[in-house]
Image 1 (cartoon, rainbow, N blue to C red):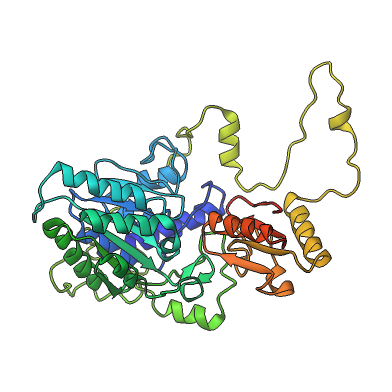
Image 2 (cartoon, one colour):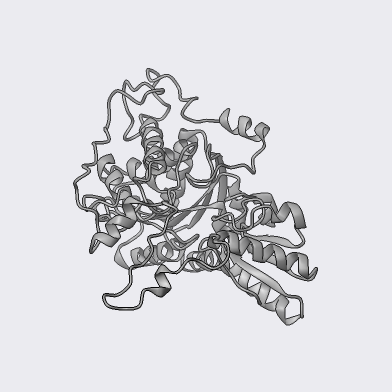
Length: 427
């Protein structure tokens, strides 16, 4: 747990220093759940994961330096530098990837469990699949289709919902008709259980029992772990949607800060991969060390343009294009006409102007309300226009586009927003 915490804090530091590109999601606050789940798995089992995957790779046994190299886009990374933070993949440990699409791992994990039924017999030594997802993935069709097939075909799979209370900024209660997520398997007669995700041993014991049922009886299972993320949705999210009281409550539940003394052996035996004699505050002592990622190690990519993009991630500047040799440079050399603004500001101004111009216009999109979208294009709109005109959908662009098309057919215009790509369009 301490190794994961120290790794994540260093990853956050490197991201803010523009050494890591793309998105970066941390397991800070979820360490007990991560370690408990991974200790329950056998080396022969398969793991399908979310994009919040650093801690799982560490607890599965991957060398910290290789993981950090992947975050840096280095060829020595676990995915050769091509996957980055959200796509850690390692065949020897049967880590079948982190998935950048919400719920994208659920159908492949179910298919892997189906393959196991063809490959071997059930029994205590059989292989099984664990599919980890966040609470935001349970409202998509793939979740329900997969659970239905797992029940019908009796697949050796354990679905784990890591419920940290928030899908980006939307609470589970605001997004799910059944907020007790483990009960969502009842429709498919899949048993479920909710455990304290801050109790590493409770998580381990529950996961072991679920995996044993999957191996011996081919009984799929739905396990929900209740935990908290101590930071925002990603490194760049300041989590302003949390009140100070909520922030203090979450910090008090920090599983690393409340670890038992290192001299007290845990009940039921030691946890695999534990660090003996480790100082919980500094992370120093036994266990793995993150080796320094060599700066001169080649970045994955075909040419200097790719390397420049990775090295200068987040730089808010543009290089004027140079004219062709012997050609007319008037288009590039001419002074700009009118004020120069960013694409973000242009979208913000346009959306606000439409909402003011026509009272029938409303916005519908992925986390565009309290979270204000990944690129903050809808900043301030929920406060100014209210929830009936700025409507959140839960971490799934299709949930915004389809209802918007239907609403358009009833002659009320809407502007779907995809927070992940920053696009908007009028329907």
